[in-house]
Amino acid sequence: MNKKICIVTATRAEFGLLKSVVAKLKATRGMEVELVVTGMHLSPEFGSTYREIEKDGIPIAEKIPILMGGDSPADISKTMGIAMISFADYFDRSCPDLLVVLGDRFETLAVACAAHNARIPIAHLYGGETTAGAVDEAFRHAITKMSALHFTSTESYRKRVIQLGEQPDTVFNVGAIGVENALCAPLLHKAELQKEIGFDLSKRYAVGTFHPVTLENCSAQAQVQALIRAIDTRNDLNYIFTKANSDANGRVINAELENYANGHRHVKFVSSLGMIRYLSAIKYSEFVIGNSSSGLIEVPSLKVPTIDIGDRQKGRVAASGVIHCQPDTESILAAMEKALSKDFAALAADAKNPYEKSGTTDTIVKIITETLQHPISLKKSFYDLPNVAR
Image: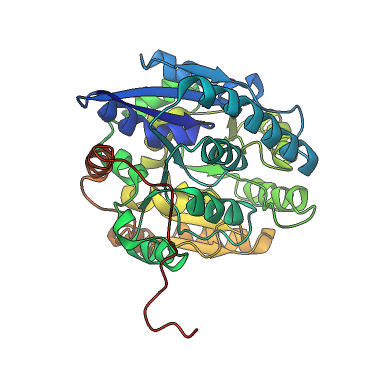
């Protein structure tokens, strides 16, 4: 009997990571895969990126719209409520044998809650990580506690999931899919990329994404303005920026960057590059700048320096080619100067990426397939670490 697997994606970045898992599970005998898209994928404001999935020829089982029109904390909570209602109906209709989710976003938590109430086992990719500046920190660990199967990107994160009380034989360090994509995806030549995005790449350039630090009150505008002052000062470089996600105050950041880009030819602002164009743009760049997780996870395998601004990614494991700096103009400029130096470029080129591990997707698919050969119990016992005082 076929086993039905539901895979949910809410953002372009999520699907870029899950794409290979979807394809390989679909090709596995006895596996029926339903891909459900939601969140920013269905929003014209964020590029309607479900079209990229359809362009790749990947069938979408359902499109479930959930986003409210704003990004205030109240709007985020309302979006989560809509997601729980909508996915409760979907799970009641579909009754999958397993839900696969990735990451730590608010939409993902709502979907996981609906699945947990429906008694559907959850496989969670990338628990155990820490992002001290984001509300995602708590969401991620909450999803872990609802999940029956865990895939982590480093050994230290595997240990942290076990520390949260999960049984060691359900937690697997598989490495990061994003790194596998960066190393294996057929990237574009520079001339092809320039033509596709309509931006001059003959000059030195950087790639950036800046998200709000969601555990800080009202810091988004001041921080993005500090970044803009830095790129205005270093106008000897070109810049390609992609939109912030639909987190609280993400629209503030997008409005500031779009407004600046409209009046400055050395900056290109886009809703989404898609995985191939994004990785290709990084490959030829001088550095990546902002506070996206990709700067810490994928970029080191492309041997490019990363400037990580502020606290959004604070606590994540990072390669030696990552420069952490404060979210003020002076600190950002100093980090840019460092990233552009020959010595640091050489350091980034030799840096070992802690998220890199061979056979990531194949390992995930193999474990899911083997796990589904037997009933998955939702009755979890809490694993106590040895030698912990009681």
